[in-house]
Image 1: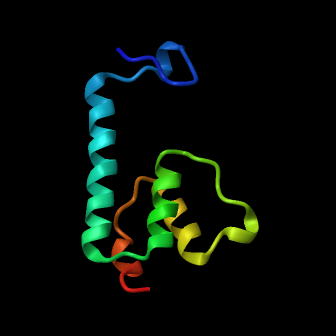
Image 2 (image 1 turned 90 degrees about the horizontal axis):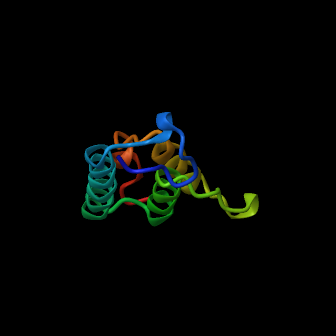
Length: 86
């Protein structure tokens, strides 16, 4: 078992297998977006949401970044195509 970064309670612990699955989803998602030509702001938002970084300052949040952040938080890759070439 691997202890969570911010919590050492039993319910916050993840197995190595679970962590590898999340890591693989993260890297696969970034690779897929880059190959598709997804908007860079969306990609930055998706990365930030996926790894649970704080959002940018309000005045720096673009529509693409906000959508990417929300999708990243939800580990959702179904909207990548909506941001190709934008």
